[in-house]
View 1 (cartoon, rainbow, N blue to C red):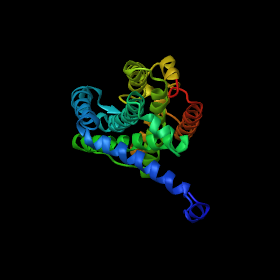
View 2: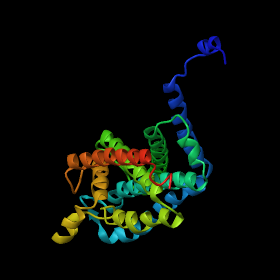
View 3: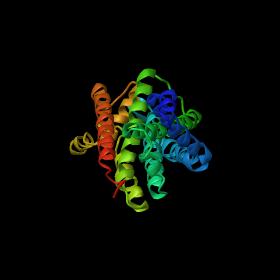
View 4: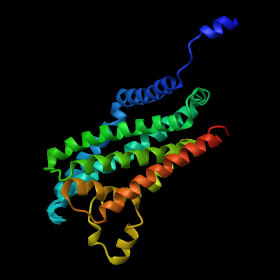
Length: 269
């Protein structure tokens, strides 16, 4: 190319390039979620129906009032948050590990997109699935019980912080996973127990002192209670501390994921 032609060539606006790349990742993730909606959305809806039917209706009659509310009303925010956590995490770990397994992650690595933008794009994809499933489970909840909203802003903030945190945790899992067993290990043996013991189905005030102190070490307890406080105005933990914990976890996980991407951990081995 001649010097004149080079001079006439328009300069590449990297901000536009990065925005297009980020938007492409998010649109691809959204398309994947909606294309296989029978796998990404329906299972959580069916699970929520079963929880309400078994725990809410059958067991709830014996439990009676929990935290000053009907049992079904009390567990509804926890069930919504549980679906958001599992789907935000599951979407990113499956999608990014699929990119590694299919060998098309290299296309991202050689693109002009910075690693923080790649991590952000996948995290947003996880948040989108978490919000879609959360909305679907909320509709199911309204079929079984009345949900009042005491603090709408806190509901939204808790939802976003939680979904971002677990989307990034899923990205971290996908980075280190070597096979599909390692993709499923953490959700099955870490995430599920923490969720069930995270105050979804009960108030920790019912627990003996040693179990209550142990529950305070569970980060999901703070997320569930912050979300429940937004709906019902009750919480087993300090709400301000819960939001601070979620924000700190999101920042730390994002920083760790970007640092690992910069080192090539899990993707250049």
